[in-house]
Image 1 (tube, one colour):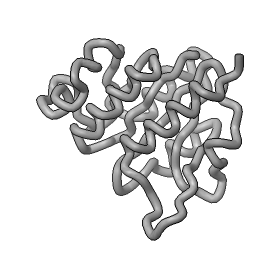
Image 2 (cartoon, helix red, strand yellow; image 1 turned 135 degrees about the horizontal axis):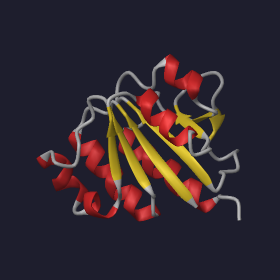
Image 3 (cartoon, rainbow, N blue to C red; image 1 turned 30 degrees about the vertical axis):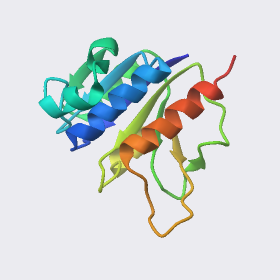
Length: 152
């Protein structure tokens, strides 16, 4: 399975580093870092990633739209993780053999334009008082579900 992770304006270097570690754990083929998101040369990203910035290829894009165009040009579907009325429970889908998954800004989420460019929107059901998880935790849940349930 080939998974591309798109980091959409995630502001915390610690979250970016954590996503790198998780991406390494699932064998992610590439991370696409967008906008204000800290890059691997940031000391806090490197500290949290514990070397995963050296094992997972990555690229920087000025905008998430450019990153989406990059993967769509390869014929890869783009899925976003966001709580919207159109979102599908992440456990109720069959993950394709190649997919790009967008994880968004910690407080603002993924913007409407990016969601419109997405082929599918996934959600993680929330049962408590809060309506979202930390983005790095969310990435861990989704990425491990993707490799667990990918098409053979």
